[in-house]
Amino acid sequence: MKKPDNPANEAERQKEVEKYQLLDTLPEESYDTITALMAYICEVPISLVSILDGERNFLKSHHGVPFNEDPRERSFCGHAILAEDEIMIVSDASADERFHDNPLVAEMGVRFYAGAPLISPDGYKLGTLCVFDTKPKVLTEKQIKALVDMSKHVMLLMEKHYTNIKLKKAKDELKQRYKDLEKFAAMVSHDLKSPLSRITGLADLLSHSLDGKIDDETSQCIQLIMKSSDSLAKYIDGILKFYNSEELLRNSNRQTTTTELFEEIEGVFSPERNLEFHFDCALQTIQVNTGVLMQIMLNLITNGIKYNSKKERRINVRLKEVGKAYKFEIEDNGDGIEPKDITNVFELFETNNKVDRFGKKGTGIGLSTVKRLIENLSGEITIESTPGVGTTVQFTLPIV
Image 1 (tube, rainbow, N blue to C red):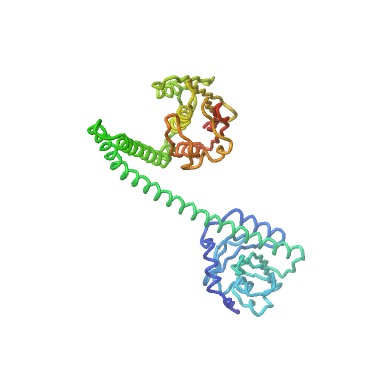
Image 2: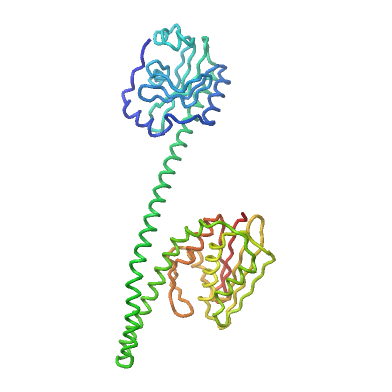
């Protein structure tokens, strides 16, 4: 028996084998289907997907044999990856000096072998798609072509597996980065809120204690300090809400009556003057994540109230069932959004330099949080707006 030599690039080839992380993995239907098909096409009892690993030949798929690995020193595939041709064929192994006394031939009765190498995109031969028979044999041209073509398909499956590994790694890294960012945001927000509160409190104390004793310019500076501190505090709260939205998503769905839902929403805004609410819904109950829905609704309605400079403000809320989803619509008669700004209203920290009815600039966090919550629940959100007329926000949440 002639043992197969290692390729000149064996060290690099072995690294390529290990890269795909298929060694010692369980059988998979996608590979087993190929070996079963090749056994049928080539009219043989045995078909294998083999991966040469160190001193062994690991069989990712083994149609017709009960074992999933064999010593590399006696493998036919070890010779096949050294061949220059696109396929190695041994018509009668008992008459071949390399194999005539090989245990596979002498003890198991193997006579015929044909193997097409599995060639990675970088040119490394990792193993073979091969077939065996217990009698001498000659393959037809169509059978040879099928074996070569299917070896390339096996390599595509291996590439897909490797791509999934990279995607999972990237996903895990992104999740970890997000956790680190979430922790950082919470830490920074917490550490900033305390001194901000002191600044606001001291500025307020200073304003009252010096009332009538300072000029208008100094008084305006103190008021600016208080206003800036208040804006920054809201900005920090917005960051915390954005990152804490993941916690809301973990809450389970529950059935709630639409009457209860709308009464709770209206109660939040009851102190607002010159505000007219109208709810239009034929549904008695809905099955939703109420914590998420309330945050979405309150954010959207608040925007409809804040960015509305008209004396009489109106909010129309509509809810209906469309297919397998709840469709919500929130319409206001506010200031509206310029067409050029519609496309980026959901971007984090994007404010379009817009100020509310009190002259305050937003943080650009609320709508980003809303969009994130809706999409994480497999819903969709759209906005239509006419400057000076109002805005209509539509979003869907799947019925679960």
